[in-house]
Length: 422
Image (cartoon, rainbow, N blue to C red; front, side, top):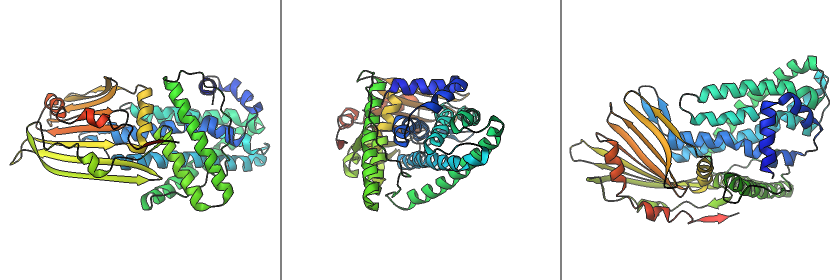
């Protein structure tokens, strides 16, 4: 995969679509090359950002503070969104292709996939806006609106429909995309919520693709992303082989490997056992005794996340703290992508602040509200372990100091444990 070419295509389709669509229309492509060379990478952007927002940064709710959900749930939501996009693009392309004659166009399945995939680019890139406090919905609406415009411009040159029929063609395609998105979300939400494996095929895409040389340095963001993409390509080939075999279980296992590879940054990761991660919860913290502990390891689609929690409190109430240690396991690649992209945020309110930044090579997140005297302070270690300490009736300095009572260095030293390259 040539990432210079991919980035150039994204820029061109967003900035100069009128001249780029005719180029796209004449390019030689296959379903496989479009998926492995473009769709798999771009569709991951909103899924990754959604995972980070739900599971790491949290959503700020007026008058209520910042809402966080469990890492396992956040991972399930991200997986559902990613799978729905990959399958949805293919289904919408099938319908766009079937409708072509009705609007004076020419049927061609690859051309239909081109026009759908490249029109979705604006929405996928707009997924980054989820990480910007208060602006996510604006970015999303802008991305959707511009995607509609891209589709309108692309249908005539790519599907060979008359310009005067492009509006009607685009409207039907948009309605189709909305319906498909809703139906897939409902179906996948039901499946992910009731069983640990997902026996979905890839809609018939044989993911075969020959990578071209990646020109980024190995340690750069582009180089790491390139390695991730090559692992995705290898997993995709296994998926295609499983489909040809006609074995439903093999196809389900292959889909699980694709999702584990997508989230794991090119590797399959077994999360720490509950007792192992629980051992990093100290008996006391910040002068408070531990009064409650729990630990669990959850899996879905061949992916694992482990979480250990402890509550520390004074007798009779008063000060209290809660420590949460999460082994992102198979989702560590999502955090690595955020790290490579240098995701940061800084927001102030009348009663406090929230910010995310890098310190000593690790991501740090802190939040404080003077009105409720509630704060949070956490770090992501080795692009795998998220450690968060929250407290009531305290201050941010106390939280920072108390976190020093956790064996962070020992935990970070385990960052490669259970990692199995694909």
